[in-house]
Amino acid sequence: MKHRVVHRLAMLAIAAISAAGALADVRLSNDFPGGGYVSTYTLATGIAYTDPTLQECSRARGRQNEPAVAVDPRNTQVLIGSANDYCGVYNDGIDANGAPIPSGPVWLGYYRSENGGNSFVSSLVPGYPVDTSPYGLLAKVRTAGAGDPVVAWDGHGRVFMGSESSGDPEGSKKTLGDVWVARFDNPGGETGNTINDGKRFLGSVVVGKGSSAPNLLGVFHDKTAIEADRTGGRCDGNVYFAWARFTGGRISNIYLVRSEDHGETWSNPMNLTPRQGNLQDPDIAITGNGNVYVTYDVGSFPNGQPDGVEIVKSTDCGKTFGPSKLVTTYVPYNAQDRTDSGGFARDCGDFANHCQSGYTFFRRTTSARSTADQYDAAREWVYIVYDASKPGTEVATGTTFGSITSGVGSQSGVYFLRYDGATGTHTPPHLVDAQTIGHQAFADISADGGVLHTLWWDSRLDPCYSAARPIGNCADHSTVASLDVWAAVSFDNGASWTGFSRVNAVTSNPNYEQFAGRTVPFGGDYLWVTSLGGFSFGVWTDWRNTVPGIDLRESAGDDNDAADVLQCRTLLASGAYSGDTCPRNGGLDQDIYGGVTP
Image 1 (tube, rainbow, N blue to C red):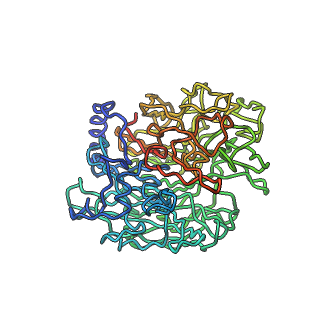
Image 2: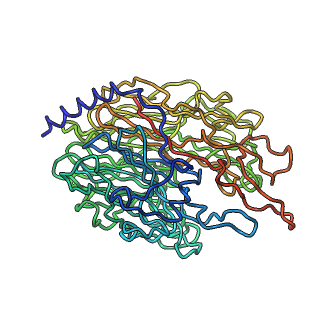
Image 3: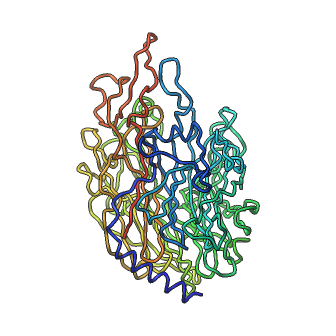
């Protein structure tokens, strides 16, 4: 069996190399007239169905961020992508002043390609509010919104999509904080045509409940991760889902559940880190022998806990895990500033979100991602990447902005290390790309089939780059197009990297103020790459279609950031301004793009 798998992967690699470069950037979120969203029920059955949310998504030109994507290991023509999708937000009519009401759901996109990523059909995971399709009735979730999508395939035509939940469907200020998993299979069963893998929705199930407290102050689940066992071995078909559990908005630990029946039922949540706190960003790696590893970010803590990456290991198919082990420490890159009132800020924009530095920037912190090659039965290696401050690049910013502390900036770079689970040792961390200009952020890595692929956000083409300023910010406080996606490949298990390439065709400005009432930017917390052998496909958040504009609420000349987006407002008799009456005209056009990577 292993011989046939390896041979198949070699053929895939040859095909991928011959096709590399043939694809241009492709849009996954087709929420514009002429594009449109199709119900997953219709995609699977051919039976027509639509609703106000899908109709709104077909014209919205809305926001999408935090993308995920996974390639079908049985057929690399099939890819499933997702993202936080805001396309249905304005599905609820207009207010008395003619402004569309932003009360619709933020949900998980379901973006499907059956041609190797040349194009995608856009849809939503079933179960969103007003989804009355037969598939919607199978979604056993309790929420008015969802986010943090993650995606994984097993080796039998099934795809699993995990999420955290936020809003109360009854409209209260409670934040439910559940986590849940949706599952899809092939309508023809495991022996059906693989082009239909992951097409039929089987249902969603809550795997961890929050405490329904207001403003995230109870038990709240966030920062999700998912992986399925494709090894063909003793744990084949198992699905693992992990997340960070926040208590009272402060202490956070890493929890995990597993399913042994293809996502139909799940184990009780298990705390993997009972003796620690301030932990986030779990990721799951399964080695070729079926052992399960969970990595996560460790934040500094009053107990002396350092910033770094830790790992836990299971040798019994996720039933139990050993003690945590610190793999490496790092100096984080945490964008930070002070608001005009003196409070801490991790993103800056206008009005209550204006910061003393005068810069406008999106949220970003150091985070680690990990993976393993499930087809490598000979080695128990886990591959880890993270974006951190580069030692020796510290610089006084001269403002309240900083990346290490307020007033101290740095350059960020993507680091790689290889952890040997059999021995507990690892290679020294080293930069994937020792670029001297620009920041690198939100790296991801994929390994199945003997080749490593990584990608990251990169600002080396930022005309205003400085280690003393946020990405895309100039000395005069204006913002510029500054962000690209770069990728690289390793054929020697990460000992060296090659094929450094800019993946996207258009550099864009990540600092457009599209959130919190058009006052602050947001780009999400991760990018994603998926691969099988030589075939690799990456996805990212992109602003190339955003239409800039003027915010009439600002006094003339008091804002030189060039980060305002197109919006239409009317001055009311009260002296206040109406809501935006043209949110579908491009000011909110933040999209998910993807492309073949080295």
